[in-house]
Amino acid sequence: MPNPTITVTVNGAERTVEGRPSVRELLGLLDLDPRQVVVEVNREIVRRPALDTLSLADGDRVEVVHFVGGG
Amino acid sequence: MSVSTTTTPLTDTPFEIGARTFGSRLIVGTGKYADNETMVRAIEASGADIVTVAVRRVDLDRTKEEGVLHHLDPERVFLLANTAGCYSAEDAVRYARLAREAGFNDFVKLEVIGDQETLLPDVDGLLQAARTLASEGFKVMAYTNDDLITALRLEDAGCAAVMPLASPIGSGLGLVNPFSIRTIKRRLAVPVIVDAGVGTASDACLTMEQGVDGILMNTAIAEAREPVAMARAMRQAVSAGRLAYLAGRMPRREVAVPSSPQRGMLD
Image (tube, rainbow over all chains, first blue to last red; front, side, top):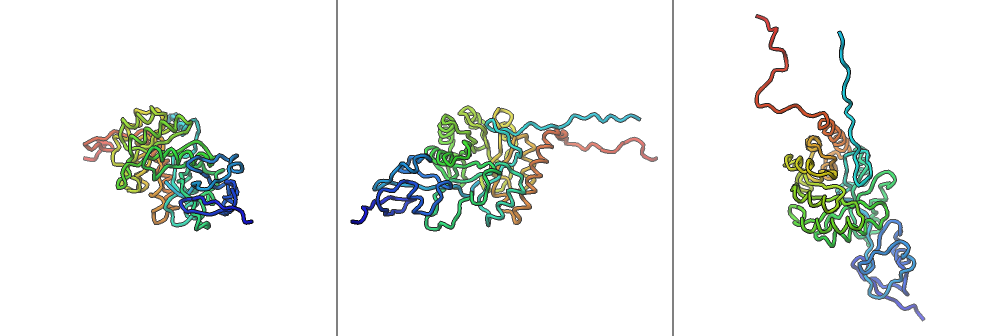
């Protein structure tokens, strides 16, 4: 039987992922280094220790930000 | 003949913000550079300790687009995150919290913009965000206009530094109101750092001559034809302006006073 999937919105675009990945697992799927980004789930900042413990649920809105050039 | 060589050494006070001491009074931005290599070399040439960065979404479709941390070593520069692009106190607080979670420091360059054309601050939103962030332990460095009352209120809100503009962001118009800047500097106890509007080295020098604690600039360097050379010029201009301020300028006179003796002229 295939794994059930959930749909989450990441940086404004919908993505379908298998199971209920942790935030760290999602970053892995997106090929992002967790040390280089900060993540919000449903407008709540995900503290570093919660990257492994917070599992995403269907409909979650995820924002992944980093530092870019600015003045 | 005896010559007195006694002079008072011009020792500057440390440049301190939020109980932290920095070596350079020049703070530079990292935006608008043609390429990252030029940015890195310009920052190096500027001698700045503090560099500003913005918080933005990671571009997931172009993962090759690297964040600025791929080019800057946070061990060597002090990263000052800004809330540029935020038009409400709520957004600015959100961006500041995200920036702090990156784990470098609890300083934030607070911007709450009120108007797209002029990028002038929304004073109500700015004060509200400053109070919230200060109460959360942030060292708030607030970008503001050159209004004394707003500056006093920002200080009262707990800001670690108040940063009035020389002229609008990215305009390069230079210091349009030296009087306001001097007044703000005279009346505030926290550091006053002029943020935005400097166009070239003479603007930076003139701004520092007003006695402010530092200058923050981005476009003047990034949009120069030779950014690395301009960064070096700005470094020297900030030093020269500071030293001239400490040295104390001669009085302005509306009449000429000869520099050479009037006596001893030939018949």
